[in-house]
Image (cartoon, rainbow, N blue to C red; front, side, top):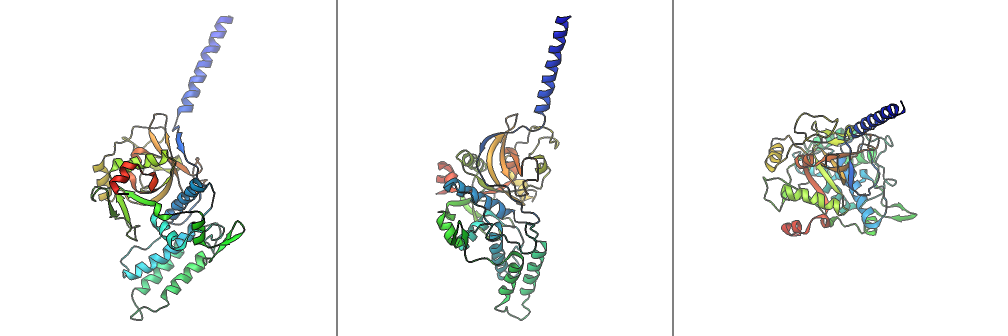
Length: 372
């Protein structure tokens, strides 16, 4: 009897352990391979300012990497100045230039060159509802002003139209202070940049499309590149190599790409390109993405640049598939990973429009190809 009872207990234990193992292995199980230290997840809320939130997060990570200092920089500081520049360009192009909330990573760098950066405490960029960003009303008012201005009601533009335009930005976002308090001392935004030895010239943008010459600087044809900035166009394999090399060497980067497909599931913490049906219960075989398919999806406007995020690490799932750990700007309560998600290698190969990275995060062989 004792032997039979012992045998029964052993069988029960084995079944229990097996069941537990199956339950534990259900879904996606990620193991971080590199996880670079960055600042906390922020929330862009009801605005189209992912370009500023992602790049500001990237700059904060760079200051942390270079100087071991944690800063909370103002995203709306860059948004404010970008609105000014976009408004002027819209008028100069007689209304034939893109105007809206969207932008690219270089928009932040361009504003830093001109105006420096400032802390969130010093410039929150919200005069109407602190802690809750909403820009729909602001956007419509700014657009309405510009639409009137380009019709030249007085036959030629007055000298004060831009003052009127900026007054709307003052009302919604607040006037920009000439200086602010940093650790008990008054400092200007430009001096803040100098103090941290932050050099915007150390950063560049890369893209990968075959309708442009390879290893040359090109103007990327996406609407949010309203300033017509240049990107280095490289092969897809080099593009992916830069991403991997950067993360392995301790550098993060800004990612610009498409999140409008069924494979992007922020709430489920993943972005994938399955070979079969979309099913987020567990890892599945993914499509092999080649250069021609990637280009086709871009040319037929299936792949667009609709979101920017901050890539902070590498990981793999229980099947060994590589993923890129991604810091989103939809708040730390937006999913079960505190606002992070994992994008698969196939997803990155297909949906990456461009990245911004420190020049030292590019392998020497690729830098040589680009003449850097």
